[in-house]
Image: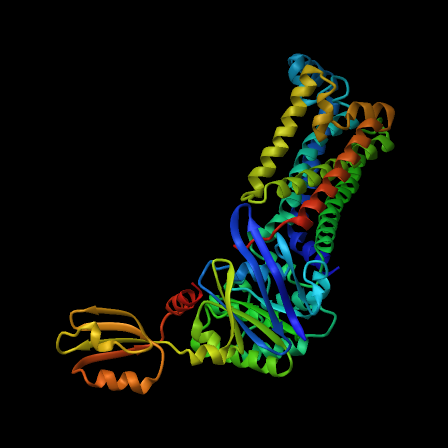
Length: 267
Length: 294
């Protein structure tokens, strides 16, 4: 428990900054929505002039863009991107920073097992991300309720289902970060690795949407949840959820195994 | 009873040598020195005992329990101080010490303040702002605050000024009197001489010799260097116990082991300009051990 609290405190400031930034981002974009909605026809006409490939890549669907959920799902793509960076950074650093900052001797000569250490640390990472996701979802809901047009009521279930995918995407990137730090024990820069990996997956997703290749969706966590599908059906595509969960569990088990077997060499 | 028992402990890094077949035992209440040049395998042995790295073959027990399998349990009673100390830099000293204490199921507050006072350590400072010596003090407090039964020190004196070193040694002797067993690794012979009851000499990953301190000091080698007024020849020093003799015009140097009076009488026969009698370096002592072995 003491390791968990120590880590929560260590990541507290960064979690706070990320949470506030995500909320500020959604607040900024959603505050633009009323003006888009007012001139819906003109906006749709304008979007029509964009090449179809580009529209697909950035996730704009004509007709949806001027509804609150459609607009929100477009903004949400970039929220997921930011959330993924946060999660990947925590995941890649939470175990490896002890080695980089050479504090690993301190921790590992205490009367705790390596299993306890990794469980405490991953729980702390998990909770930090959960705090970010849940605070974001709540605030986004209030913002959306505030900016919606008087005539339009949005499907709240779809809204929450869509927003909750932030947490799922974050946990997936947390797992990617953790396994990356296990496979690259000499990792020097968490930031560049995280940005590189997250953007690579993001662009794979964009490319996949453009060519309309369904199998690409399994590669990048950003495409596990199709916002149009969620808005229309108010549910997830379960095959992706299952693949995602399996991937998360497998990565964590592999990381446990590597961490408990690894030699902690002197610096 | 043996607190540490190492049995053919071997660690290979791929094909590179770490340590091979290291066997020794440390008795309860003993101060055991572990001495060898840099890169000899002192840290590798200690890190294996602490389960920071895993042995390739062989095993070791601490308090009679396997040091890998029962690592978390054993470590309740171990205090460890590495040669280089690194702590969470943005923490205050007191917060770090409290974090450290939180791993042990006892109240260490009183002991923390006692130790900090003895070592003149300001616990309200940030670790970031501390000098190397002060960081080392944090390490000492951190290693002793739970009153461990076994204290493992890996070249602990680097960065401490002589005065602090003395205080630190006093602290260790006190702990030892209270019943703590100490494993002390160092590459400085005089340090080990001051403190230890027995020593293991390690070189190139293997234990060369385990000897009591008294036996080691009986074999007290001295390094002589003298500058004569006239030219001298090496024949003058044909005496039992003289080795490694080197003559260069008027200066002579050799290593001597044996009766001091005999050699002093010999030297007195020569008109001298200058004379040095020094402790031989560890390497020079080792050379003698290796010659004996071969």
